[in-house]
Length: 161
Ligand SMILES: CC(C)(COP(=O)(O)OP(=O)(O)OC[C@H]1O[C@@H](n2cnc3c(N)ncnc32)[C@H](O)[C@@H]1OP(=O)(O)O)[C@@H](O)C(=O)NCCC(=O)NCCS
Image (cartoon, rainbow, N blue to C red):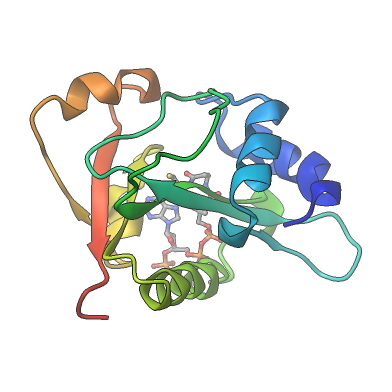
């Protein structure tokens, strides 16, 4: 992902997360903080049709939705997959596996033990197929309050990858 992709990313996000709005500033913020974890599904110079955003974070924690963060945690212990979305017209072609595996390979190479995420839009089954498992820890429900009642915290262990 490059700064020039942000317009397309915001549009894919608008179409993909109607109940979980995040401001354009949030996408710019994450790209500036950790470009290594930001990818787009792109074909030449055409607007991106999908994106993935991930960055180092603390386990058993998730940033509140629609929040600009001042910096990455000083003591991160995993990679947090903030968003994965594909434009509705580009879905169903199996494009997600490549970018999820690329992120997991890169994170393992960088020495991170796990990738975690908050599943919304009833996507628990989708993430289970990509190696993530639900993880329930005390206090997590309160931390996920801004994500809605269907939100589930999930983790994929990279130790054995
Ligand atoms: C989730 C999403 C990225 C999948 O994109 P896609 O292009 O359809 O993904 P792929 O083609 O690689 O995989 C499609 C498979 O995932 C399944 N799938 C897609 N969304 C799903 C969901 N919310 N729950 C369960 N399974 C889902 C499809 O049924 C399909 O299954 P099949 O292979 O057995 O036919 C896309 O639906 C999307 O952008 N959704 C809105 C944003 C979102 O919910 N992101 C994830 C939540 S954190």
